[in-house]
Length: 88
Image (cartoon, rainbow, N blue to C red; front, top):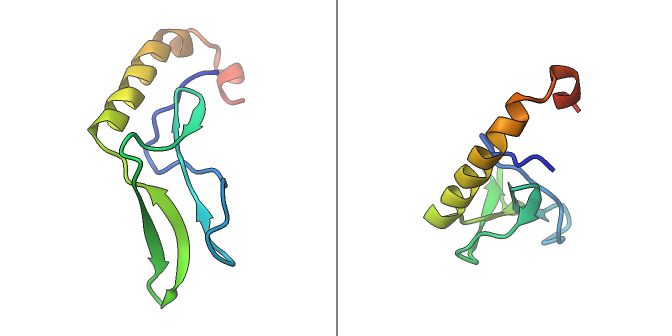
């Protein structure tokens, strides 16, 4: 798999937190992973503070460094991949 650095928070459903909320992980080096900090935070609907939209990873410096290293390692291969293949 080609590693991807997230410019926006990447997500995957890993657990149901409430009736409509999901827990999200970071996508680093081709895998959905929890943050190195092991901490998460809730994002709530501003119109209904009782509604938890999702639970997100509280990423730290180590997570950012890991993502940057994975992206740098994949850059050469990705650059050599023809556009039709990159669009997946």
